[in-house]
Amino acid sequence: MRQAYAPLLCALVGLASCVGIIGDSGDERAAAAAFAPAEPTLHRLTRPQIQNAWLDLFGKPLTIPADLPVDDVLYGFSSISAARSTIAPVDAEKYENATYAVLDQIFADPVRRDALVGCPVTAVGEPCVKDFLASFTTRAWRRPASEEEVTSLQVLSAKVATDLEDEAQGLKFALAAVLLSPHFLFRVEVGEPGDEGYRYTGWEMASRLSFLLLDAPPDDTLREAARRGELATTEGVRAQASRLLDDPRARVTLTRFFRDFMNIGKLDALDKHPDKFPQLSATLGPSMRIEMERMFENNVFEKEGDFRDMFTTRDTYVNEDLARVYGIEGITGPEWTPVTLPDDGRRAGILTTPGFLALNAHKTQTSPTHRGRFVRLNMFCQDIPPPPPGINTTLPEPEPGKPTTLRQRLDEHRTNPECAGCHEQMDPIGFAFEKYDAIGAYRETDENGLPVDSTTVVDGHPVAGPSDMAELAASLPEVGACIARRFYEHAGAHLAGKGDKNSVEELVADFVASDYRFKDLVLGLVTNDGYRYASKPSQEVKP
Image (cartoon, rainbow, N blue to C red; front, top):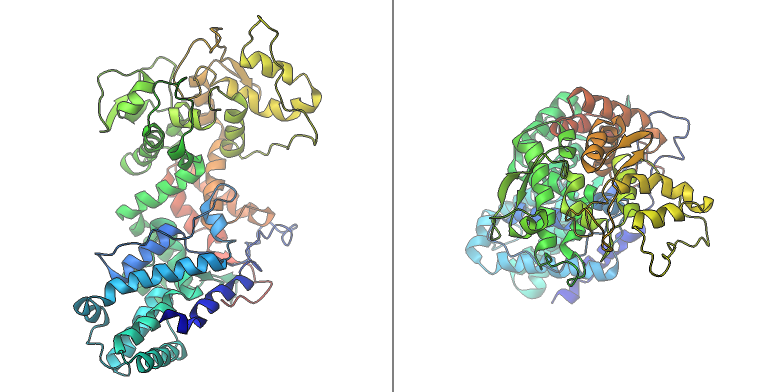
């Protein structure tokens, strides 16, 4: 039956030809400008977003199809990837199958179907059905549907109903057209010209706020604010963002940012050698991820505290999996228990969690280079040049019968000037964490029984060990600035370029002034001109 209406699918696949002509950073265009926001782009809905959009339109109960396109990660964030995505034919087919799987659930129950429409589905020409199509399409496309668009849906519905002699099937195909439209599958945010440049419309700002904070379409209150023009002002945007931050879904969505930021989604597939690490279990990796997410939620939502405390806190959550790694006795089972770790210099904050340490290590041994690289790139926002082409990156092997520590081998490796440039930026940071093995358990000696040295010097700062490194990270202004910058990039779905300089500096200043409270960072971001304005599109954007 659906094959007869393949143009729906073809229209969807055709979107690939227009996505990608925009969405790159405005860096080249803005080389001499302090404020030149990025060009507008089309953001493909991520899996959580499309699932939440279906639930918003149809309510529960609803079985969510599992076979949806995978969300890739680009420059650390799925949001950036989504802003540069096209839809391949195989993914278009997945969207089509999933859409009909959802609609079949609604139309299999005439009572539920008619309750959704607001009247019995007996004639597609009924005013009630037309009003429903207008309302449904406005909600699905997150902006008012035009009279022409609604009429075209009525025509499609009538044609299918006539061909199949089934009014309900006609309406179902019309709804499929709505849900397979680029206006549903993508966030179409192009802005409109004004006295101060291209500013996102009220409807576009409603989507930007709601998807950023809830991973869901705008609710009735937000849509009404868009209709009234309230989202054209910073006060209106701040008021709505503050309201959304109180929604329980904001905790889930902002934690998803933290998951991307720390790259801890990879912990769900933790790969370590079971013979070497007796603490290993099938649930250890996910437990590591959840611990770090709980620490974030506690800081942002329970305490509403200084985000720098994330680097120094000894308060965390453990279950039996993690208790074995931490060496804590008396905790059994999968339930989570809040604990305060001893003030003995061994643990402090997210950089000494088993999750961070295990993720940035090899399968059987540690990697000061990987650990230091992550901190340098993601906590300091500083670039590391790639190794010269053809360079041998293999560490020197110790002489037979003369074991050496990994640190000694890295020190020898850095005597090569071609290696030193990169490794000097990474290894000294990583040495501070050498007293944790590849699964994040504390140790005083390495696998050869040699004492581990975790003293180091980071950018001129003497560091006596992991707690010192945690204190240093919390105190460095570039770390707070980096967190603000990375959230700006996640929210705007592009890497910050020269044209974003003023916006990022303003956001960092607001973050500092708020005593580094993450919720205030969010409010500063959504009212920032870099988030509310776009550059004029270099080409027409028409999904």
